[in-house]
Length: 195
Image 1: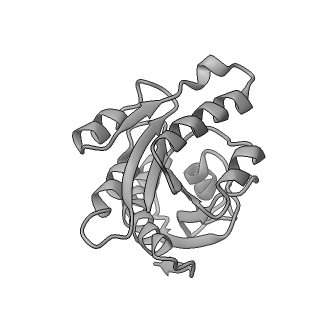
Image 2: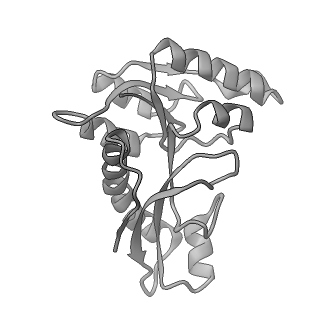
């Protein structure tokens, strides 16, 4: 299975996914695609020998469909079978998500369905939650929605800030996403829960 990984920033989850797709893994990375030429993860992917591309969303002011059409063209050029969103900070339309239904995963830094969207760690702290975590799910047209394939839980400690909590959650993201991808690429859709 050929996997396109979409990023917007430094690509730490992308790196873990690429590292995991070796040996007897049923998938291989075929593309790392960013929505900006200066996304730090592009250089990391190149160093790892993965083809890279970018489609700058700023060229498509107010035209998400045109931006997504260009994304789709690049993804198809690389023969991708599935997509992993790894810190891709663009909301995708129903038209795009429908094309990839059942073949697109995302990782989100909260225990969905809690705290969809941004500022998830601060929102969990402000709510007085005892735990936070991350979720890998299939992507649907609704933001941070879709069948949950895995979650990892992290306790919220006294004195935690959004930054300290985010760092601990990110450690779990780096383990959970590769584990879910391997299962998903093998045809397993059952949910896994850690912590």
